[in-house]
Image (cartoon, rainbow, N blue to C red; front, side, top):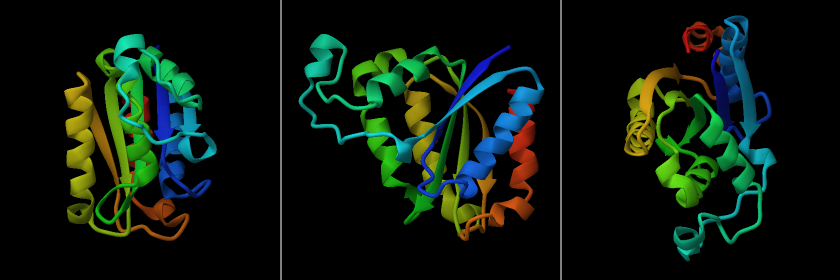
Length: 175
């Protein structure tokens, strides 16, 4: 049995990225795994100040929700990273969160990672986000196990009729 932490950067509650996160969770839980979804837009996450105090202390000087998120990420077996694409890449909420990994960056490896990338573009328009996220998480010492492409979706709920629904469910089952 594994435990997955899902970081959803969807600004819309139950938006396309969230829907795929829930589908992944459904598959994982039916296979006997546990999941916790963290909706980043519901958290207080400030921008990194690049003060590097965390290099000395292992803690960020900013007092917000990131310390709790980092603790959960460290303890997880599996990470699911979900983002809609904005101008061909991850959205700002996810980027701000990743920047705040700095205090624990050397302790964030060893996870199986699944990426959920959604957007109104076809796969070609979503690939930059995948390349960036894959590079980031591999660089931290993780293995990318799967990518769920929520392509050609824009309006809330459009992903419900796509093959990404089954792909998200199957990824959860196989995590």
